[in-house]
Image (cartoon, rainbow, N blue to C red):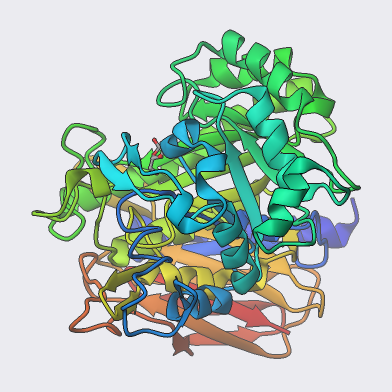
Length: 521
Ligand code: AHR
C-alpha cells in the first residue's frame, strides 16, 4: 500500500471516529466514503422492475379500464398511467401474478374477447375474471411502456405442456398451429419474451411444496421452456420466503446452474411484524414507524444470507438473485375489499423504497432483478387511481430520482453514522448507495430515517475532484404525509442546495425524513 493510501485510510478512520464522538455528544452526523475512482459491476436496470397481478384494481380499473372512462386510452389501456411509468424508464413488468399465476390458464386470455371464458379469481376476493386482459394485451402494454415483459408461468395447476405451448405462441417465428393462432390474433411477429418465472411462492399459494419437490418439478418444467427462433429464455426459479435459507440451499444444490438464470426471493415489510394485524398505511405512531424501518432493514440480512449460500454453489455468480416481490404490506384502507390490498403510500413508503433500492444497488453483484409489489392500486404502489383521477405516490418519486443508477457502474461506499433511537432500541439513521454513469457522472443516494434530527453528512469521493454538484430531495415533515386526490403534490422531487463542496468532498445537511440524490461531475 502506498503512503498516500495509508494516509487516506487514516484520515477516513479519524473522520469516522469523529462522527461517532459527535453523534455520542448529541450532534447527529455521518461520514460516507466512496471509492469514486474504482467503478465496479453494472447495477442492472432490472433491479428497478415492477409487478402487475390480476389482483384488486391493478389490472382491471388500473392499467385496463372500461371503454367508457373519459381518459386518454389506447384500446382499453390507460395512457396517463403508461406515460407516468415511461417517465421512470420502467425496465420490466412481471405478470400475471403472484398467487394468481399458479391458477392462470393462458389460453383463457387469447382470441376474441367475447369468446373468452369467465373464470373466478379465487386468490383475490373471489371476483369474476372476464379474461379481457390476456397475453396479447399484456404484450401491448409492455410495448407502450417500452419495458421487457416478465411472465410468471403456472406450475401449481399447470403442466409442462402449458408452459411450452405458451412460449411457442409467444416466441416461435416459424409456422405452427400456435403461431397461426397468434397471427389470427393480430401478431405476425414473434414477441421474443425472455424473462420467465416458473411457479410463484411454490412453498405457499403456488402448491405448498417442499423445496426438494419443487426443485424436481422445476427441473422437469424448465426442460420445456424452449429457446425458439433464437429467443433465449431466462428461467427464474421460485425462491425463498424471507428467511427460509434452506429453500435457497436446496434449490442451489438440486438445480443445475445452466437450468436457472435466476432464483427469486420474496420479502414484505410488515409494520407490526404480525401478518394478522399488520398496521395502518396512514395512521401510525413513532413506535410503529421505528418498527417498520427496522423490519425493512432486515432485507440486508436476507440479501447477505441468501447470497452467501448462492456463493458456495455458484462462486462465479452466474445465477441472479431476483427479489421479485418486495415492499410494505399494511392493512387495507378501511371499507375497501380486504382481498384487493389497497393501501395509501406515505413518506414512510418513500424511505422504505430508498433503503431497499440502496440495498439492491449495494448487492448488485448478485441481485440483478427486483420487482416492487405492485405498480397500481395494490400494496406499495407507484400510482393510485380513482375513476378518471390519478396520483403519483412518494414511492414513484423515489424511482424517478433513482433512475440515474440504471445500468451505471456501482461504486463501493462505507458509512459511519449516528443511530436513530427509539426507547431502548437503535438502528442506523443513514443508508447510501452510489454509482458512476456512462458519462462519468457520480450519483450518491442517501436516506435519513431519523424523524427528529438533521444529519450533517460528510461525503468523501476518493480519487476524484468535485467540479460541480447538484442535488434533489424528497422529504416531508411527517412520516404519515401522503399525496391524496385532494392534495396530489404534497410530496415530490425538489432541488436540494444545502451542501458545501470542497476539492474531494461534500458536506450536506440531510433533513429529518429525507431521501437525497447528489450528482457530481
Ligand atoms: O403481491 C401480493 C401477493 O403476495 C402475491 O400474489 C404473492 O406472490 C405474495 O404472497
